[in-house]
Length: 331
Ligand SMILES: [Zn+2]
Image 1: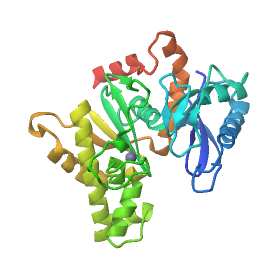
Image 2 (image 1 turned 60 degrees about the horizontal axis):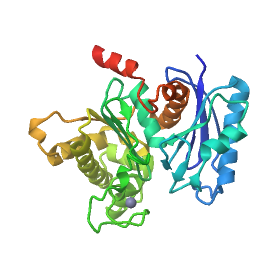
Image 3 (image 1 turned 90 degrees about the horizontal axis):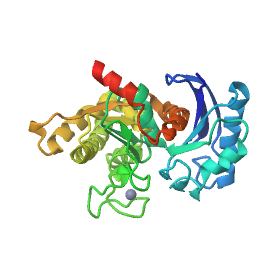
């Protein structure tokens, strides 16, 4: 089986991975994310494209022609071709698939596939991770903000414009905290890495990231209180998503999910408290993602590998249903 390559653009590095058909990462290449050093803001579209071509080319030189997918933190159209808008990247209605396919011509199989990074992460978790065998799943990635993905009846759900799953900008507090999107009270202002750092600061701590997690696990009251705030909002948002989609499982990924049960246990309690009809239904599992920071590249590589076959039968984005259903039957 020919492997495929997945690429994503992080705050500090552009990472490409060679992935086999079982989701195993065989090799990686990385280069520094162009821009200001704190993220791709300030980089030009050409600079980001150069970085993507650079890391991908290095792997193609070793592994030969294979399918390539790019996971982008932005709105990607339904055809997996164009990035309509990316808040932290210099892409505005950018035909990224065409640009990259042209530059990598002769060295890749098919066209470069582009997908939203959280949707790609959900695909990976559904195929190889925490949501294996599940048909109705929600992905929440808690990073600086919130990314989201949705699987309905075994298929990725993209919506009319390909923009479904932008859960971070659901309004949870009318006239609440100002959001980077220009509106107020968005969920990610209360439940994200940024919200966690803010909660710690309000409690009088200057800790953030892994140091804050360690302090909370060691019983530091300030750090614990910060996590409780964010966990409460995670549970409330998860209850809203459950009311809308009734998933079997909600997978929580992204950097903040590294806190594990410190975050998930109180979030489950808030979910049960907030969900309509909670005593008369099965609650969804609320679990940590299994594939960690590589979920996006693994997922988009797998989508690129399977896209040609799925497109031919007109079911682009559909889960390889035999795999999913087969596992579901065995459960
Ligand atoms: Zn917003």
